[in-house]
Length: 487
Image 1 (cartoon, rainbow, N blue to C red):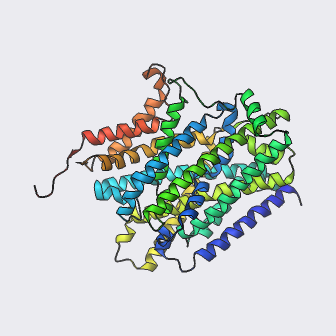
Image 2 (cartoon, rainbow, N blue to C red; image 1 turned 90 degrees about the vertical axis):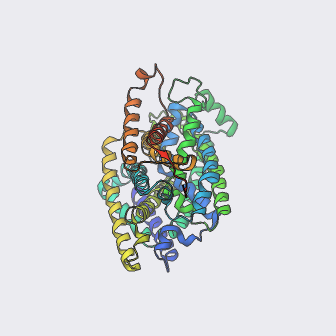
Image 3 (cartoon, rainbow, N blue to C red; image 1 turned 60 degrees about the vertical axis):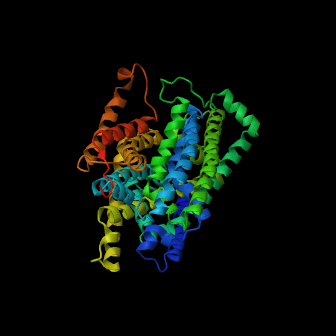
């Protein structure tokens, strides 16, 4: 039996384990279990499992690959992420718990009206669909190129089988299941990461100090860029990272669905703060791994960069087979938390926010479950179409595409929530969808011609902030003073 066949068996055994957990945790499940886990999740379980969802296959593959090009500059973004989690914990979570929300976008209906509510939910659906399928595509691509191609299994067949298997273990339990499967997968992913770091460091006869010095000599540890006109200026990365976290975590139904499944606000905040510190350390280790991979590639005279460097070295460079196994387990562990959680959150958002399922008193539990299953399967098909599309537009660094998608799609969502929280004005609901589409379009052209329009200044991660600011300004100009009750 060749190595590719053994790796395929490992992947299938991993799926069998997930199905076993799903069967156990979904016993007695209902629609409330699917949507918010009956609000009975343990905070420490959610905190640990969320690491896998946040890191995903893109972090596992793409972040190490950036080190050879931009050094540790991505860590400035990570510092921004860390700051953003405090805003989520102490500004947004109290609102969600006070209102006892199942869908966080219900806040927009309460504060701004039904059209704003539907618009916010649709922007989440668009953004999470694109983001989740980007992550899914990257891992399937690696599986196909380095494992399944040797077995004559195509990219298309791989994509279909993986989505079917994800459906099998999420269709009943939803959040109640995913909280536990994410914990398992985070454990495997972090263990794989640490084993790979240890082995490569050992094979190069380096301790941590010598590793850091060797990386510094190559320019891999550079974190600070002081030219404000460049797209990767350090403080742009920090500020952009903070707002990306507020958008992609605090205003994201997938991430918040798990947080509000915790029974009370205090424990949910403990979950968020614990999670953000672990995430800071985990991202640093991924960047450290990236530097080690480039040092190893130099030592072995290998020419490989960006997203290909980790899979190429782990699977094709002659490392011991146990490292290959560790990589594969880490990779599939990074794949599923981002795909299964997104599929569940998108199903929840569409059923609750778009179809209004919780308000449909004329639907019994059986009909609600049937509709939920149809929506769940439909999103799986949409995922498949997006994965095939991204295969055509892949430029070799998926994390760059992901951050751009976030900037364009989460900007209007960030502006809607900010307008609701920080003003006491009423929007013109008919204008809200137009404004939320117009602002990203304006930002697209601004980004395309930024150096010409802004005197050589290049827009980086602050694109999300600019997008939100334009949306907010347009909402404010078109709004009116809120009527005071009794006047």
